[in-house]
View 1 (tube, rainbow, N blue to C red):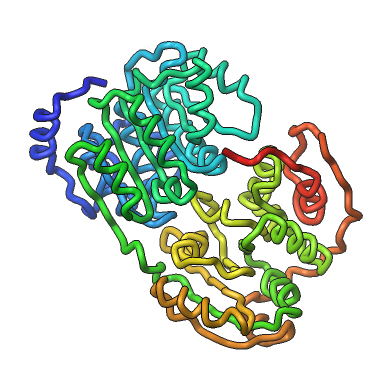
View 2: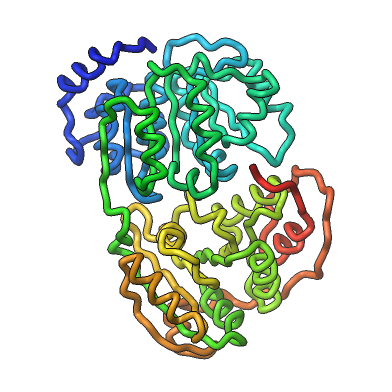
Length: 446
């Protein structure tokens, strides 16, 4: 990639007006190279989402990009396409990647990799992921083998740089994805250090669901005269999302969740703590509703298997902490259940954003005890949501109407504790997934 002087980049921006934000058209109409169009077409991706249509012309022109859109709006392709296009025909040295994508979680790193890999292959480029929770040797080997693009969580990447396995002085295009979540997790200091290690003349893109003061620190420090693209309201929930606020007695909570998740819908259930996710998954399995779980106490292999099981539809129910609230791209989630109300409205919107994605409809259920009603009322007001309210018990007709036809009761398997099984088996699901994942206790994610 030829890096333009700043004044020439700005002039190029003024000239680059063939496609305006929100304009209709195909990817080819927005200047996407033919091999990438072919790859997208093969995956059934034919028409850009609004954030992609808005950002692609400027990003492909080499400009810095500041993009905002809620999760599910298509931000990953909005930066992946120009990243791959901009690095084509270049030369990468060992341990000196030319493309960098920083993400807050391991799951998001894997999903960004899944989007990037076929596009990179179409342009003869390579991609690897770097994150903690697994051994670093395969990651070091990939770097030594001159991988072109690194998708990384900040902590592990900083470790590898400190050990001398990676250098960022050849990075031509860098991306910070889910920047607001980086801030929420306290990653901004290490993100700043990593970005400072990249050449200042390189192209930089920052994408986020919200653009608050913490994110503005990164914008002011690292983006030069960025093209700003914002395609939806940060504070509003999608119109296709129906919100219910159900008051339940504390003793009825598990049976109410089981009634809601017992239909044929694909359901994502949020709890506040890791222990709560483990316990609720076991309780649901005991009630005949097999549920996989996703939280920070699981080793990476177990997390990947359980998420893959849910993504493929083999497991209809996933019980998760807020680790799944950001950046987990699973299509076709019909029902989001806040078994524990979140503590603040941003978390509510991000959790709820797992459903009603890309124009699809979805239902969000928040369960509250009578004692929680005051706090939840404030949360809903801050989120800009006016939910349908009701008091329910496990046998309420409203629960049956939301859940739909019963998927049938599953007899739970006998519990098993597997502590050191190799990560080679097919994805575990249902009550087996609960038993399997319960045995995995790994290090905290970085």
